[in-house]
Length: 356
Image 1 (cartoon, rainbow, N blue to C red):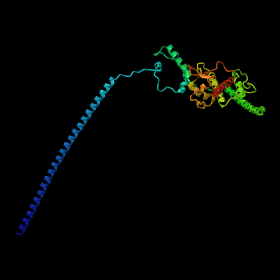
Image 2 (image 1 turned 60 degrees about the horizontal axis):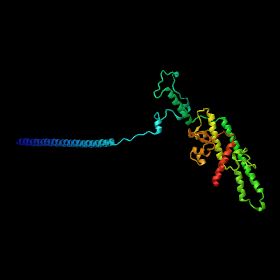
Image 3 (image 1 turned 60 degrees about the vertical axis):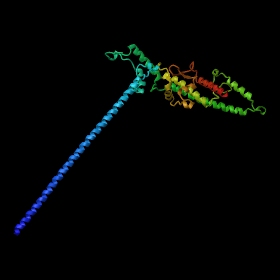
Image 4 (image 1 turned 180 degrees about the horizontal axis):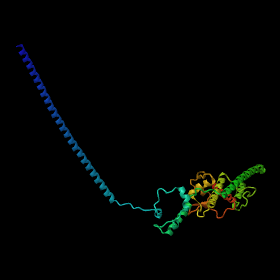
């Protein structure tokens, strides 16, 4: 009996365990179903959100399109209004009308190469080996004439990079420097002797020289005809023509002679009659090349080389047509004394303006 009771207890116990397992399995199944339902709900929400997002993007795209269409419409309207306005009239200047070709922004060759070779430019010829030569702009004669004019103009306006001063120039300039030193020494000697004679001359009755007598002596000195003087070292009483020269007068005398000699030496050294003189744009270059120093207009109280030349216009000037440096003298100067006479005349005129 005890064995039967024990067996019954074990059977009941197994039934209870199986019932518990069954309940646990059912719970797990229910939880799984709930999770699946929740997952389906989440996916549905995501799909709804995606659809809403796509709809929002579509709306934004459509708005942008509408704005672009509006902008295009405004631009088209503005263009139409602009088209209605009258177009400005383009007018060429006289210099532009004379141009046959459009000026290039950049040159094919450097300025140095151009200035060194342009005088060798020529029109192609069949003798050079060409099968055919066609003149599409102007005929052969007119093309040659155009090139000739261009070369002549270029010879005036361009500078010679490799020009070397000749021995003739060096000799002439050396003579002037030597003469200038002798003249300045003569001036110092005269002024010293004049002071000595004034100290030795006793005053009559202790009276000073009257002002009227001094003015009369000055007038007699001014009455001397400068260009009739034969000996600039003695115009009377041992006084040289340049006896009253100051620092400025010596500077202008040197400038006057240097510029006159420069324009003369240039013509001789280039050995080309078509190069008629130094163009005003290259005066500083050639002055530096010949005299190995700079011509500074500021030292003469001027701003440009043209204004410096104006200071000695009795000796040199720029021609009105070609703007090249030429002599202002009607005849070739007889000697260095001519330049001293011109400077003395300049000094007297300056003194008269000061006294006035």
